Image 1 (cartoon, rainbow over the protein chains, first blue to last red):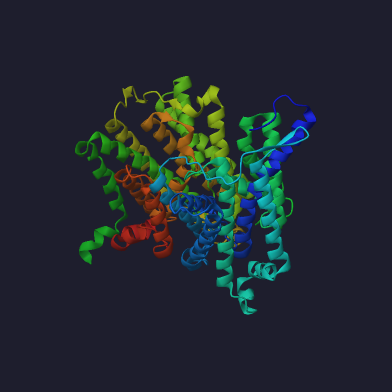
Image 2: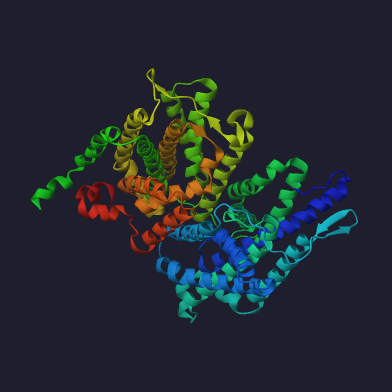
Length: 300
Length: 320
C-alpha cells in the first residue's frame, strides 16, 4: 500500500511494521467492540460494520448539513450511536434473546442491512470525502515515515483501549460482564439487571463503532458499503486473539495489521486482502481457541 | 370441510409446475427472464435450507457454492466447449465437492458462530481466486458463457430456457423432498435438534453432516450452472457478501426447514426487487424490513401463512 520504494531492508521492515500497527489499531478497535457485545450478551454482532458506517455518516451529516463543529459533532455521533445500540438491544434483540444462534445472527445482519439501505437512499453509490480536522503531515523517524493519520488513529485507539481496560478491570463492570456471560439466570439471581446491562453493552459496542468509523473514514472515504471488508478483518482479529478475549482482540488486531503489511510488502499487494481470510481458516482449523481464548470446540 | 379435502392431497403440488408450463405463452421477454431467475433462486434457497434449516448449521458458504457451480459450468463451456447438460452436472458435482469440503470444519467441531465466520472467509477467498486467477477465470471482468445447446437445439431465448430450467428444478425439488422425508432427512433434523442424542441412538452423525452439505452444494451448484446459462456472464461480484445476504433472506423469509418456504422466498425476493430497482437503497430496506418482521412476528416464515390455508403444505413441507 505505502511500502517504501528503494530503501534498505531493515528500514522497510520497520516501516511496514509501524504502518501495520496503525492499521492494526483499527482492526483491534473493531474486534474489541464486537468482543464487548459478545462477552456481555453472547451475541456476535454481524452488523457491526454498518454501525461503523452509520457513526461516520452521522458525523458527516452533523458537520456538513447542521454546521456543527467537528469535535462536538463527533461526540454527538458517539452518543447517538450509543442510543442506537441501546435501542437495538431493547426493541430487536431482547424479544428474541432466547432464540437460536441463527435468529440472533439474522437480526444483526438485518439491522446492519437496514442501516446500509438508509445510507443508500440518500447517497446511492457515491463516495464522499470526510471532514478532516488534522493537517496531512509526514514525520520522519530516521528513515521511517509516519503520517499524521497514523498518529491520530494509533493515539486515539490506545487512549480508548486504556479507558476500556479501566472500565473492565477496575470498575465492577468487568465482573458483571463475566457473571452475565457465564449465566444470565445466575447473574439475575444475585441482583444484576441483566436487561439493562445488555443494553448498556450494546450501546458501548455501537459507540465504539462510531469511534472506529470516525477514525477510518478520513482514510477510506465515506460510502454506504465502506464497512464490508472491515467486518471480516474484525472477525479475523477476534479469531486470532481468541474469541471473547479482550487482550486477544487488541493483540489479534495489531498482529493482523502487521501481517497484512508484511504480506503486502514481501509477498505481493494482491495478497493483502486474503491475509484475514487465511488467518480465520488456519486458526479455526489448527488452534480454534486462538492465542488467548477459551475452549470453543463442541464435540459429539 | 369436505369440499376442501383436495387441499390436503400432496399431489396438488404437481399442479404448480403443470400450470407453469403455460407461462411462456402468457408473458413477455422481461417477465420470462424474471421467472427463469426465480427458478434459479428456488434451487439456491432449497439447497441453503438443507444446511441451515434442516441440519441447523450456521454455514454461510452458499454464495460460494453458487459461484462454484456457475464458474464450473461457465468455464467448461467456455474453454472446452463441453455440452451444456454435462457442464451443468459438473457444476453440481463440483458444488457437492465444495459442500463436503465445507463440512470438514464442522466435523472438527467448529460450530455456531465459528462455523459462520470460517465459511464467510471461505466464500470471500473463492471470490479472490475468481478475481486473481485471470488466466482461467478472466478476472474481475468475468467470462462470457457460450450459447447453451440441449440435444442440438440452441436455447436462444428465455422461453426455451424456461422448460429446461423447470424440468431441472422440479427434478431436484422432488428428490430433495424425498430425501428430507427419508431416514436421511430425519437424521439431519435429529442432529439439528440434539446432536448428542442423535449420536447416542446410533445415528452416524458425521456421515449425515457430510451428506447434507454435499447435497446442499449439489443443488446450489446446479442452480449456479443454470444461472450461468441464463445470464451468460459470470463475474466475481455476483457472489459477494450481499448475494449471500439475499440467499439468507430467501431461506429465512420463506420459512426455515421448509421446502415450500424456500420456493416462496425465492419468488418474493426475486420478484419484489424488480418493482423498486430504480430506487436506490429500497432493496436493502425491503429485505431488512422483511427479515425483522419475520424474526419478531412470524418466526416460521411466510410459508406458515400459506400453510394455514393449504393443509398439504403443513403436512408435508412445514413441520413444527
